[in-house]
Length: 546
Image 1 (cartoon, helix red, strand yellow):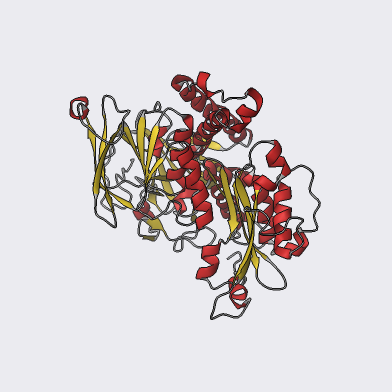
Image 2 (cartoon, helix red, strand yellow):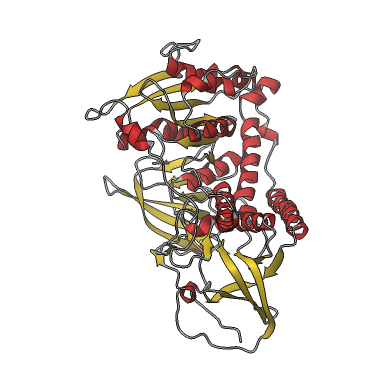
């Protein structure tokens, strides 16, 4: 009889109900969750000729296709088009911006977001069908370490699945705060946003990568007055100062107002009667809305605002709800499964977790890589190496911001001596031709005779193109000397990368100091010999199939 595990970690005996049993089925691999990480794991297991099932509670695609990456980047592309219509590219052709007769249609926008997800969903379903992956719809709950029950409340039926290996790919859910009630209408999370029309005004609570991305996107769409609340002294605190400053400048260009170094003092939803007649610092609120108060951390001054919507973006946590992890005896610490470097549960060698369910590196690309790695670690006849710690990252703001490797802040924290060069896109012919000259390429290399690449950071047009190339170079520990020998096409954005390398080597055509966007500096810790810190940073990490 079906057992119900109502909460993730309950250990009471579940009650029994009279649902129809569909029997018991055995698979080589059972993947729980059909997001990008789960799909990648399932299809990789097929490569090893294994019998695979994929369990999904809702729709194929997870947070990539639905209310997540794909839809938010589609919205960003819309905002990018409108941003260029208001910018220098339009002025170059028409002598004026063309946004005066362009207004975003909310209904068409929401329809487009749905269409792109449905297109990708059909493609993924076709791939799963062609690979003979058994797709089971329903809620999954472990009854024991080797037994999973998949139930459908609508059909009042369940089936039992046993498998040699289980891969947990259940994704993540937004972190909410007890003092900030989310009603999914006025106060929302990123999981709600893609199904709602554009508000006249909105506050984004959280100045990290995701919060900054939504604030910029909605600001560029041109229909929403956006406020961004961040408790730090500057947004994107993990980035270097010059990168964060460029990001904030791009936001403010589109009317985003940043509450920096402020705490959320209070926030509440309003009915129409409560919001009527209130004098507040901003306008654009009609009907239901949100009133929030911020407190400046240094002065303790309070300020109150009213907006139509509040977006809470204060992080995400693994989604283990109802999974019955207590029945597996898997170790959970601080709400996250304890895993080894291959994603395997430390005390249950047949259970793995991948993607957002690991609680780390929440991106589609890393999720897919972890899904494939887990299956390779199970079945590959060769030694499986852990994923390389240096991988590319990209955030979509006023322009793309992509990076790989270490930044200046991280190098200084580890006492790594480095040389850094910055090459502005206003000096690159391809960017000048495209009237897209904002941003720069920034390269860090070891401050020794080798000039080994430590990190590459790009703010601007085609940032991902440059960083993807740099990722391979950093993973191979290539030097600026090796890379400077390449020949790039003309005109291309990769020329900015090549010239930035030459700035480090002192062989660039344009010398540092001749233009504001052309900079080269070095840093060496006062108590550390040159290169000693880098040697400790570059120690090889062990790992192998166990």
